[in-house]
Length: 297
Image (cartoon, rainbow, N blue to C red; front, top):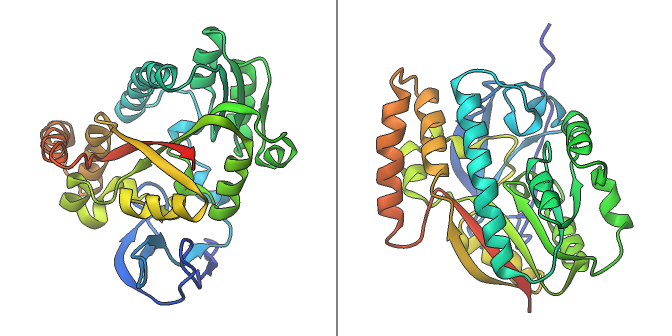
């Protein structure tokens, strides 16, 4: 007998604490459980968040289809994900080298640790945080240790890192404001926090609506755009210094979205729609996913 999911309602906006909200969208977990979920919009600051959410999120990550937690190959989508991951690691390395002269990095939500392994081979001092036991074990082996669970964040000394990165991680974090304060405490003076986030204002989000794969409910608890992310930063005394596109994401997200819609020709459709999304996004720097470089103010 299938166990019923117990939901908990979010009573106030995670950013401005307003208790006034409205339904923004009904959607579902197309990736795994097929269960229905809703997205709420704050009536005050317009922030979007999944509401209600499961009391136990554990089961929604316990699938081999969740590629950031495993390294095994498994079909076309898995192979494409792995290819994009390899391409993105080099791009991320080049970006971080430009914005820091230091070489200590903390990757929060490091998955199976491929990025940290790349940085370690380039002579960086690396540390990873990964809550998933299986992924953490793989990352540990990939990096000769220095990979920990989330509780380890509280044990780290202030101002320990030149760079702290969260690549498509912040949208998963239950205690959003606590995490932001932890990150601010750990970054060195003059260091940078780097966040990659799906952008719910992107052209591909507008096209696919409730089928947009980057909604990824209930795993994605928050649905940012640049405006709402700036409000979160301001709340914690942080400043956005640059916004950069992740152009490859539009193709991957479009591919999954087309699959969710039942399109058997999802590959060519993804190429066309991913390209269209990037062309439209160029006008306002409003891409499917964005990298936000952040500093203390």
